Amino acid sequence: MPAGTNAYRGLIDPTHEELILVLDYGGQTAQLIARRVREQNVFCQMVRPDLPAERIRELNPKGIILSGGPASVYEPGAPQCDPRIFDLGIPILGICYGLHLTFKALGGEVLPGKHREFGRTPLHVDTTDPLFAGIPDRFVVWMSHGDQASGGDIPLQTLASTETCPFAAVKHKTRPIYALQFHPEVSHTEHGSRLIGNFVQSVCGCKGSWRISSLIEREIEAIRNYVGKSRVICGLSGGVDSSVVAALLSKAIGKQLSCIFVDNGMLRKGEAEEVRQRFSDHFKTDLHVADARKQFLDELKGVTDPQQKRKIIGRVFIEVFRHEAKSIPDARFLAQGTLYPDVIESGANPDGPAATIKAHHNVGGLPEELGFELIEPLRDLFKDEVRTMGLELGLPEDLIWRHPFPGPGLAVRCLGEVTEPRLETLREADAIYIDELRKAGLYREIQQAFAVLLPVQSVGVMGDARTYEDTVALRAVTTDNFMTADWHRTPYEVLGRVSTRITNSIRGVNRVVYDISSKPPSTIEWE
Ligand code: XMP
Image (cartoon, rainbow, N blue to C red; front, side, top):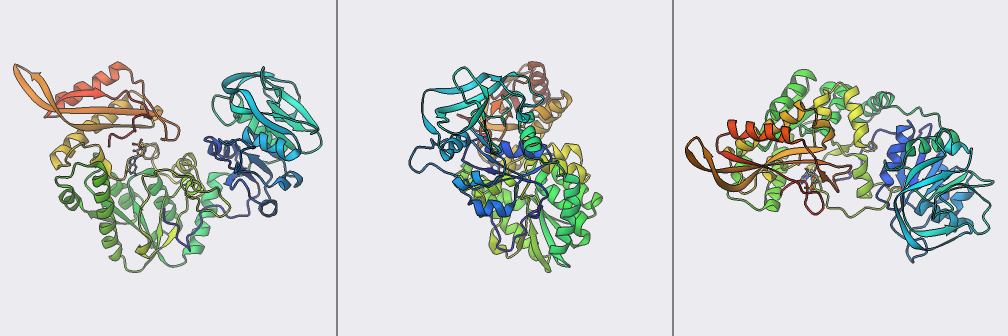
């Protein structure tokens, strides 16, 4: 993700009324903590684990949360916090690794435990402390730790325990410091959201005034000031993020916005037309549709290797985009739908956590040498917040909840050579599948579903004749973050209807199979 030097840093100006910081120790669920806090209508940012106390004081948060993490605090090189943060007088909540750090910093001890405690565990709450207000005194929490902490001489009050963990929840007797051995942010912990809410509201004293609707107003104002009279280009993909950016910019600067939509021919059925209608007809945007279908197909001729397909599509996309952008001579800015998880994972923010090594499919994107200044108005938002914003901006529900679609599009779902007749078969099969999922009310509970055209012919029978035709695979997954996924238990009747419709109405397909692999070991896409 290119981070232009002059890039507009996004929605949130640094003068939030209320801010909670999450010091990120690399736990898989650290981002979930930030999302839970934001559900309380309080702005929350992930920052470097060792952010100095002076910088934290400058940022003036209402509270600090230390996340979990995979290390052991006593290991050499394990990430630490600045121990002076415990003297700032700002409320602190340490979670798991964060609890160990808290104990270590305050003079307690952390040692390898005899057993690793992992999974759901009953918790006994022994307190009327505001942290547990409105929560039953027994409930199930999610544990995942090997180390055990002991408080030594720290003046601690135990708030809750489990059979094996005497310090499942503790509080410092004189300072606003709390620590939990379990993970309140995950859905397996009952009342976890309430607990985080109690910390944010009762302990930190936040009122919860952060709203997407008021954010939109502030953002529109900020974009207008930033852009002045200049022209902004926005690349539309048909997906949620770029559509929300375009809708926001259209509201903010109207006629100064030009959108570019590259039709690479690898799109789902009806997609190009929908983009045209929505942005040209509805938002009255200056929309440039680059019809590059033939160019992409020509370049993909004879190519079967998936990575090769991706490379070609990436390169041709940039060529076409650059060419189209040149036809808009006075453009100075380029708007992109970069989201907060990308920003966190790219390590782009100087106060933010370090980059995580992750094979991000979208790396590459549009190169900086296009020569534009970047505008990234969604840089501080999680996906669910972007959806809320899109709905408030008047984008239709079915776009907002549309499953993600890979940049190389149907090319990586058309296994083997990509040809127009094969794409047409795949487009029809995919449309039937999605239609049946919608009719069955299943589309929203699935995070991604699509058809794949296999390079496999098999024998079938139609009427009295033997056929030798193509196979379509159906893939549907449930997932929190697309890094791991499970296959969706779609009812047989629905799968049956999809199969019958596909084989009855699409010539050249005589077999439909359902993919029952999870990720890992499989990936979500087949290529
Ligand atoms: P995998 O197949 O790696 O996919 O389990 C995880 C998520 O990433 C999407 N994906 C891509 N997105 N360009 C993209 O923009 C790509 O080349 C690409 N490959 C996979 C995939 O659809 C899923 O949501």
